[in-house]
Amino acid sequence: MLEDRASSERHLVNQFLEDIRALPNVNIKRIETELLSSDNGRIDALAELHAGGRSTTLLIEVKKSLFPRDVREALWRVQNLTSSVKEQLNLKRAVTCLVADAISPGAKALLHREQVGYYDGGGSMFIPTAGLYVYVDKPPPKRMKRSIRSVFSGRRAQIVHAVLVLDQDWFSVTEIARMAQVSQATASHVLSSLEKFDWLVSRGRGPNKERRLEKPSELLDAWSNQLGEDRPLYMQRYFVPYSHTEKLVEKFTELCGANNAEYAITHEAAAQRYTPYLSSVSQLRCRMLANSAAKGVIDQLSARLVDQGANLEVIEVSSFGELLFREMINGIWLASPIQVYLDLKRSAGRAEEMAEHLRKERIGF
Image 1 (tube, rainbow, N blue to C red):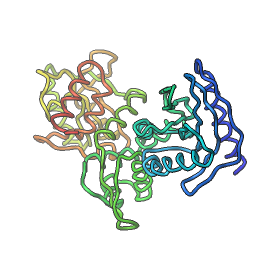
Image 2: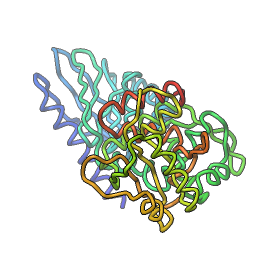
Image 3: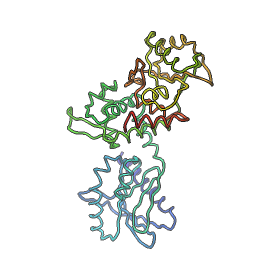
Image 4: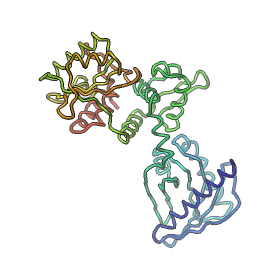
């Protein structure tokens, strides 16, 4: 196991050095040395970089992965480690570069701001040194993509939803698990991930530990961006013989009540009720719990499946968790503003404008 990890680290360092060598007018030589350790950490490799008539020693420290929390904890140590090694080896110029298989976008931003070099398995690179400034930004490697995607997938997304609904109130694992209708183990795992990304802050320990959303806007952006990379939502498209969308909404909600069908109206029809923006809405889009009650509503509406010209589009959901945090306004269940915003961001036309209007006027972050 240790041999595999050492081999992986060597491969990553060699990949880093090869990518530097590929830069124009840059020469680099790896210096084989024994590991240099101090109270502030260790150096896994040293390399001498020549560019612009100057030489700089790269102090390379290898990590498995880096998230904002890791970087915050490491910054002071890295600065002291750099000073210590420069003194030990009598180096004129040196810069520490953190090399990891996966580095989150937030961690990169922190390292960039603090002028600490980095390199990840996807080829992203930042080297701030005299005579050379290298900044290469590439898509996150697969491992980081999986880590981000997992936070916003399936029942875990219900936890993120609950955290955003609470905004900046303090909460415990037990409270968030109850709100999101998931197990405490699942809630604890997701909250720990959100902390690593620096979206949450915490206080206390053990059963008394509480967390609070520190960066709601960043978390919502991350969720929206992730959904933008996923497949478009599958919708059942129907034509219903109603000339006015408002009349269709009234009849639809009436039949849902009569059939005990669980639903939440979303997209433009919901956003218009939260924060009016358009002069009129031409379609009713909703989420419905897929069961016999929902089928009864569709049948009683005399809805006909169509490829074009739909005025009713249904997103079938498999569990009530996907309807959580809906709000009843004037007797109509609307998906939560967060959900409506995310649905609009995945739509075409003027939906994105409406999404930003809803976010500004109703969500507030």
